[in-house]
Length: 174
Image (cartoon, rainbow, N blue to C red; front, side, top):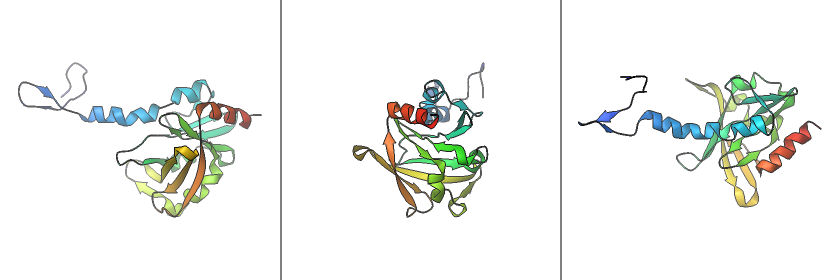
């Protein structure tokens, strides 16, 4: 039931006692979605394509999903086939935004072994996706990326800071 434009909230008992509702869970879940989004737009001057994780600047594309530690202590993202179909893969870079303030910067071609058709899943609400886990090894400044479908299929990438991502993206355009 919606009262005066207020979204539904679950209540139990009388008098009305609020309990944790789906909206609160969604807000927590979405915190990572918005993480460093303004940074991409203002500092890196990237333009977001619609509401997707795809960004563009001067003919180059950037796939930038946000990721934070999940419920079971793992970091993971889904790369949607629909997003990859929007871009020129020859001019695309993978820049996950990792909570709190880390990034990865790789040419999307480097991830081709994780983006094979054999590793793709079809999900009812997302369509075709590739699930990718990230094991962060912060002391060494690296992360291991591996497929949710096959943990043998993995690669090591470098973790970089906000300052380093600014410099790296600038170098792409020089």
